[in-house]
Length: 386
Image (cartoon, rainbow, N blue to C red; front, side, top):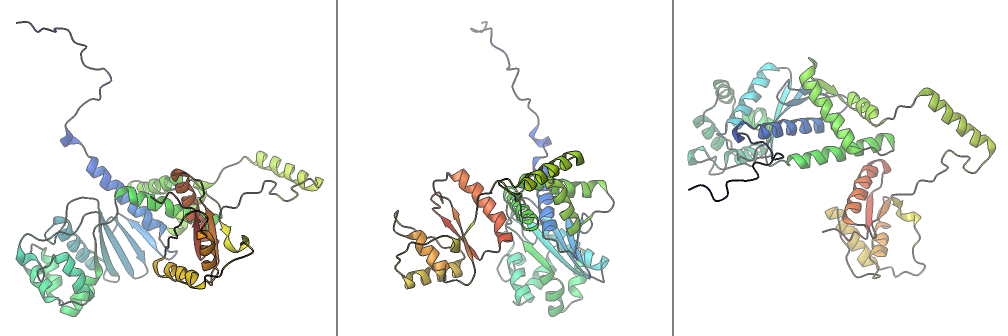
């Protein structure tokens, strides 16, 4: 019989095209992106006497005088054990770097979002524990023999076996176990991206005493890292190059004629004696208020035990929350506590701010604190903590 409804609307013209999921490279691209952001963070942490090597000795490495600290970056959700290909390849890569750089003290960091798992075979566990967990304990001083027994049984390259067999326990601990760091369970891509943005904002504020668009800075840094890897033969970066890049990215180019016109107008304002004879005719509102510059109520109860306890909690924990109903004196108690401290404190007023506004203000405060030199900060009326 013919179909009851022979006519249909047909396929939607705006429907997304379909393809074979097996041909998608999303996981690989995410891994490359993670490596770029991790390399960018390493560039941000670089000291003036160091160089960042990109795809020269592992994914990236920091070289300084006679030391080489290489890093392998892995963004994967699969747990790893001593038998994982990535782990055995990392150990082999470390021994290879040692042989290629006899004049340097070589270290290798295995940076991965994955977690440490337990080996399937009991004989591949060191002292009954996951071998990578025991590796850390042996590096810190635990008995090396259980780890040696595992290394004999697993599938390692010939040069790694020779490296292990040629060293007694003390040498093996100092020249292998303590020089490979299994940094598993690292933050995810979104977290490392935010860390780079926040770090670059602090970097800019500390050096230029002004704000900048953190997303713009991060995009410029990641792009430079990528270009350095794929475009040039000199795959290395320095701290000076980062400063130059941040300066160029956050600067606004003005034509000389426009600048001269602005300077002439400013000289005219100053010479005429008008209001604002100083350049700052518009006073910028103070963002972080020095606590001691703000007045206290004329009549106060000391509450010494409470304020000392509050200050002690802040020192021990780094962060302390004071809660209570409106008008009970939370802010006053916090301010009295900070005045018993040796360093200077500031206040950030978050009263009647929505959560998205609070996030923006906290981001700005984080960028300003490094340059301001405050010992601590009071977040007043942080009502959106949840």
